[in-house]
Length: 309
Image 1 (cartoon, one colour):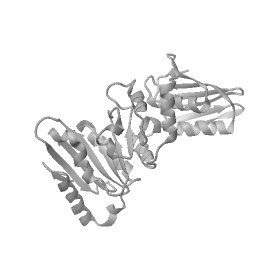
Image 2 (cartoon, helix red, strand yellow):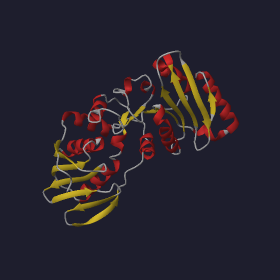
Image 3 (cartoon, one colour):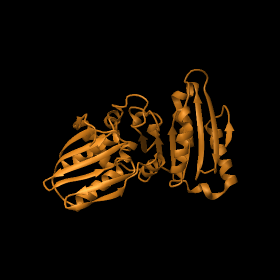
C-alpha cells in the first residue's frame, strides 16, 4: 500500500494508473466500484469484509473515513493493488471542511461506465439515497443490526426511507430462511392461518421475515422472544397441522411437517462478507424487499415476551 499524505482525488487516480501499469491486466476485470463508508475504529474489519466479497465481484473498493469536520481540509489515502485484493483499493481519510463534501473526492475515482455500490457497515444515514455519497450509487447497502444507538427503530427508519436501490443486510440474512419456508410449503401446500416467528428481542431480520410472511401468506403473525442466536423458530399453522423450522444453535435446523419425519437442514448464520457478496450479485431493484418494507411499516406483528420453547 502506498501512503499519500495531504493529497487529492487526482493524485489518488494517478496512483491507480501507476499501479495498474505495473501490474498489467489482472485488474482490468473490475466490474464495479464499491464505496465503504466506515468509522476509523471499524475500518480494518470492514475493508477485510469488502476484500473477501471482491473475490466474487472484482471491484475498485474505496474506503471512506469521515473524520473531524473542523479545521483545514486534508485528504490522506492508502492506495494499492494485490495483497489479497482482486481489484484496486484506496482507504481515504477525510478531515476538516472536505468532510462535508466527501462526494467531491470520491466522484472522480469511480470506474467509468460501471455500476456503483455503497455500503455502510455501521450507523447508516437515515435516508441513504439522500446522502451525498449514497446518491452516487445504484445500490445502497445498510445493516440495521449493527447500529450503535436506536436499535429498535433503525430498521423502521430504513424501511420508511426506502428508495429503489436500497437494501439492508438484515434482509439478506433471511434468504435461507425464506428458501426453506417456501420449499416446505411447496411440499405441503396449505392455507396458513397463523404464523409464529421466534427470535432475539432485537432482530431486524426476524421483523423483516415476519413482515414477509404476513404479506405473502396474508396471515396473522406473532413475534415471540427467544434467547437466540438470531432467528430460532418459525411455525406455520394450517388446517393439516404445523410446518416448523427450529434452529437453536445458529447452525443446524430441524424441519417438521405433517405426515413426514423431522429432517435436519444446514442453516448456519452467515458472515458479513458472504452477505455482502450476495447483495452485489444483483444491482437492480429488489421488488420483494420493497414490498416487505412497505408491509412492515403498515402492520407490525404482535409481540410476546415468552421465551422460546
